[in-house]
Image (cartoon, rainbow, N blue to C red; front, side, top):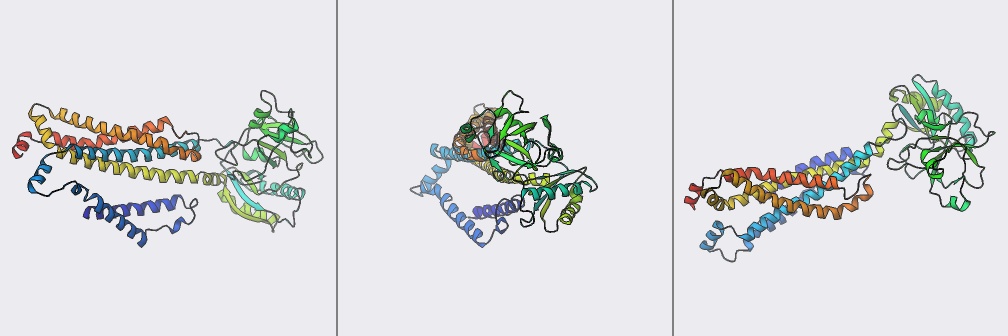
Length: 475
């Protein structure tokens, strides 16, 4: 009971630390996480679990003893039975199995986050300020009215000190499935084929869009002010669109149609693919000039600056509201802040998983050390006999380490088999990592094997230093 109480207190202290970490890393991902506290209910639950655990496991060794006669007890204390040895090794196998499963899951999430962190967005994310904008529908009921206001606002923003360029976008980054998407018909396809095309995003933009976002024009040209309502319809497509619908051909000069009700638009340029909407997916994207398109409702103003845009937030907000006092500017952020929020969820999941993995490995280390220490103390007479007939300390250490390695291998293999079954449920949250990733599984297994060996070294050395003469005399 005393050991259980000490463990419960230590566990509660660790839990309190973990709750604090969770609040700091997942405050925006988990609703109402700030209300998570270790209160009386949690304390009562822990006390109850500790009592049940101690009452069960603490008395289990007595259940196998049918009599408490002195001679029987002495025999039990002096003879190490095969059954007890099997139970001890089964305990180690169970601990290693659990630790391998948790370590493998955490490793998959860490590798997934590494892949996410290394993704190129396809545009220059630094020195960009993003202001969320809402124009009143009563004052700007049509796309033409909104475009006219924006054409007056952007030059005002460009006059601010430190501003290099400005443009608009329909939504701020990281909106995922939310946005403007439709099936389009591409030259060379029949109408029925077009109806089976995957959804692609369509973005009405200003001529300054590609320069402001730092997007590379791969071929052709970007939009200009001449691409207005009186000019022939034009479009710019992403590389993914060009590769899918005109493979091996020059997309510039090809045509596409938004819907059969709209005229064909000629492709005048190809730009690189971006991950603006979604970090884990490159969307097929077609860009249209705002002056030519029926739908234009800018939800954000994007401003490129020559340095950190944060000092210009106030000036950007003031300029927008001076141009239209009725406009609502919900927020102004840097592009990097907005993009970081998109990966905050995976980072929080990795942090929690890594924390669990650390705790599991720590508990396994302590458990393996404790079990091996007890196991070797029970085998002291056997090891003394080995030493008395000529076994060197090094040989005794090697023998015990081989035995611990065998138990560790059994636990690691069992853990990998269980992990192979369970990690498939992580497939939905992994990115460019397979649930059965061999490198991650191998790393988890090797690490846990190494921990088993390290945890058994000290007990093995202690057992090798026992004086066989003194021990056998005492026996």
